[in-house]
Image 1 (cartoon, rainbow, N blue to C red):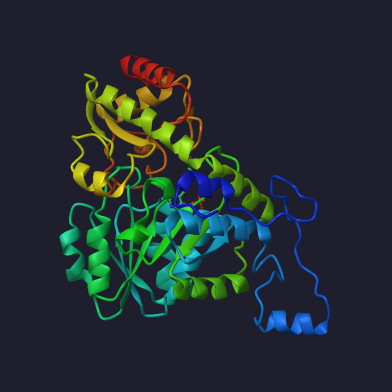
Image 2: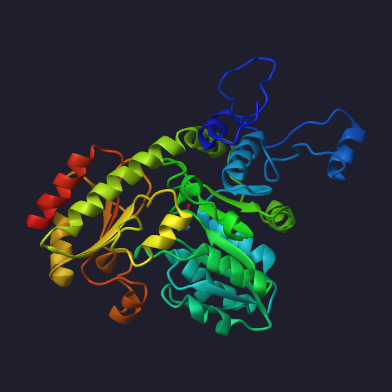
Length: 389
Ligand SMILES: *Cc1c(COP(=O)(O)O)cnc(C)c1O
């Protein structure tokens, strides 16, 4: 039975049952697959038939995970990776040649930033950054060697929102490959391909797993581009393990209900913080005060699980708040069922100068909360007592 309902597909898209008639899909923990005879093996290696050969290339559990995400994102094809960063690196490395240039938003995941700054220059691949509130400058950064336009939305940790339709139009006009890291939204809240993205990347570690258990990554999108990513990856070996793929496929069955609750809780926390006397500002895409509220409404189903705000009183007040948290976890992950608080200025971004931090939207008092699935009253109560401490 075919349907266009997200929740139904998330649950009912699964591998064909084996002769054991299992209800839940089994785990194919095998490194390789066997052949009927020499001709079968020859034809398989010649890619005359589509079948599993070796789990570095493909595995039934990974294929199920990929198929689910392709359906969610409206993508033609995909490849699953051992981590989000394996997906980011392999995708970019597969598509870029020496001498190429990438344009990226400045607010991107720290390791992706490091890839552009510290590693790609080794292969003479250069980049230019644009600020989230200066997208009109993107066109002036394009050179004859520009191949990829790269962005994340919403951004981390500043919770900025980029207009995907605008990025899609620029990419089309200048024949650039638009790559969107959709990790913060999850495929349930936002499908960048609808707005012109060519490839969509996820860290499956975050909302997709949603329970802080496994690392995973995935790239989905146009078949012709995914094929290049696949050719590169089956040689270099960043494939997702069958066990993690199995966990992820199960997790996706509950993505919609989990993310709905993450978003309800996050919006309630954001509204609470907005009225608090110890708070300078609050950033959440679905708060009317967010500068890109209209854009967020256009491209997202709800605001996501991350709320950023600034505690009055700078670094000291930020650290004091952080130290006073009792229930929530002090950790660096996000999208987990457990709410997580981070203070970027004293932790993840402490090596940057004040100016560099400001460029990514982080002030000394900035706090990021990944709002989890505990009862929202308890989440708010913990943050309230820490603010008053
Ligand atoms: C976590 C994250 C990544 C990297 O994913 P890993 O699974 O940790 O390798 C990439 N992009 C974004 C936006 C992330 O939050």
